[in-house]
Image 1 (spheres, rainbow, N blue to C red):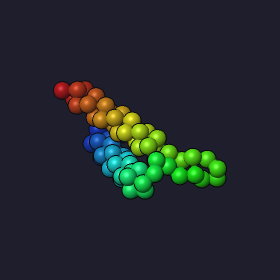
Image 2: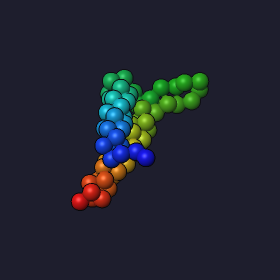
Image 3: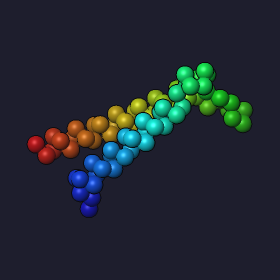
Length: 70
């Protein structure tokens, strides 16, 4: 069974990597909202939105952990 400490560490790592991903695909860095790959549009904004959603879920888990421990 996973410990709360281990889960907190995993959530911190996930948060760190999602932030890095969102920063790497910042449309302002490229001057475009996305690129064409094999005739398909890859949207930087879409991936940033999904990263933000995942970060929100991570924060939600952290809050639940704090409330459960209170």
